[in-house]
Image (tube, rainbow, N blue to C red; front, side, top):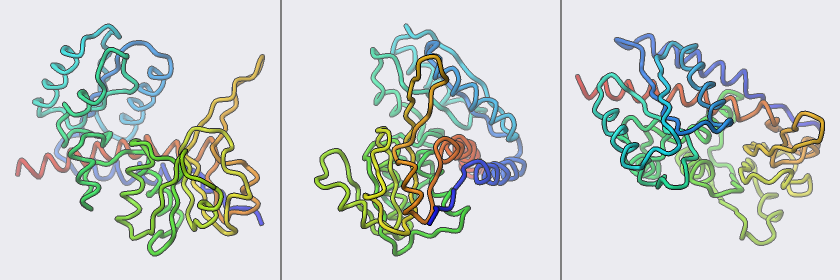
Length: 286
């Protein structure tokens, strides 16, 4: 048995095509503003990718770079200005932020209807109330990936390994909304393999390379690997490893690769969230 490969790029391209069609129906292109503090190479690369993809999808976008010495007060002031700007539909503050800035206060300062990352407490509440509007991009992207390949979680046992607010917790809410029976496992879960083997759908997002081995996966499970771990090699290009060991492909029915699995869905969903934000704001103005 060799697992079906659930590649991210085809699903992401399909989502982006749908998003571009939705954006074209609006009176003007939705606008995304990305705030970046400092020159961290990873953040610079991520932001550049998001800005490029927005423009390719027919959206308008701008990147505002502030020094990493920016005070919390100055950042909050700029967010307040963007909240009040009717020409800005989505706001994204690139994380992580410098240590002197309170991330929670910054995320809570965003207008929930412009919070395209979906981290504002109001958006978290909407998700868990069963009425999500803007939800975190990676877990929504995971759900879109499953839909693209024809998988339904309704009535199935879903096990999530990882309880972060970025992936694990919101994914649990989305799966519950989709009528799955959900278990969230984490670092303090005893006998993790006994829990993961029960899954029809296994989602892994902990950031520990090859944590999940074949003996921890039930035969015929669909496995979604959200983890990306960078393995540095002297004199060679770094390897990217998932949280799931590749040999799981001999047990699972379907498996996402790393890289090239969930990753492309995250940025595609960010574009979709930006259009959703613009659509919601247009309705409020009617």
